[in-house]
Structures are given as C-alpha cells and as structure tokens.
Image (cartoon, rainbow, N blue to C red; front, side):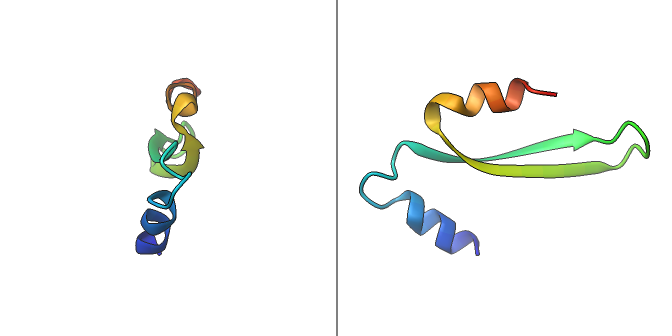
Length: 51
C-alpha cells in the first residue's frame, strides 16, 4: 500500500502533498497510537501541533 501512496504523491500536480504520520499516547491506557494523513505541504505544521 505504501508504494501506491508514494507513486500517487510523485505524479504531476501531487508534489504539493505530503504524507504525515503522528504518534500519540493515549491518556487512558498509555499505549501509543499512530495517525497518518496525506496533507498539503502548507498544513503539516498545523496537523502536528494539534493535540
């Protein structure tokens, strides 16, 4: 699946997109969860700053 996402991002017009993976810790159990998203390059800092 990762290859398909990478190939999609490298197409013409897709250069402005970035795949972001964020690691968060659950306050209830203490386990780590991962959230990933494909965002425009301008919105990456906003995504990582959210709690």
